[in-house]
Structures are given as structure tokens and as C-alpha cells.
Length: 83
Image (cartoon, rainbow, N blue to C red; front, top):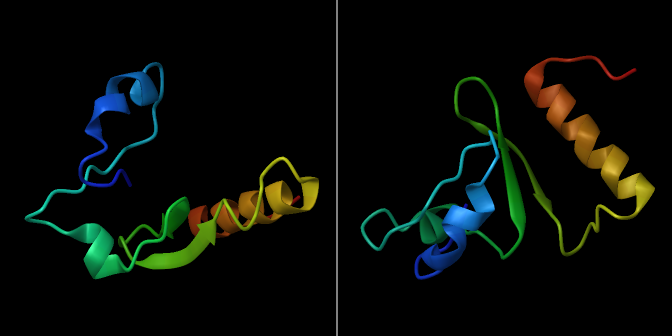
């Protein structure tokens, strides 16, 4: 989710990507409603319910254990069994 006022980098961030991006606005105020922290990854299920919040500042994906944990969270949300 991109914060309000940080729209300038969206074209580059989305170039050649398939993942959706939510752009917050003053009207929607999603950062406020969802109590977002910088670098939070909100994982939602098929019914658009938040099933996990994983902060990438606290859990650097360059660390193999953090990468594996994030991958497991995504697999669980998608209903895919871990190998």
C-alpha cells in the first residue's frame, strides 16, 4: 500500500509487475483505518480479510529465515501447502 503523498514513484514501482498496488488517498485514509506502519505487508485472503501483517523493516527478507516465513504466510493465505 502506497502512502498518500508518495505517488511519484508508482510508474517505476509497477513497471513489469503483476502484483496490485493500493494507493491511499485523503478520502480513503487506509493507512489510518488499517493502522499501517511503514513497510507493512498486509496479506489478505480470498474474502479480502487481513490474515497477516508482516513488516519488512523488522523482518528483512535478505535473511533466509524471514524469507521462508514470509513465503509460508503467503502460501497459507493462498491455500497452498508448504513443501
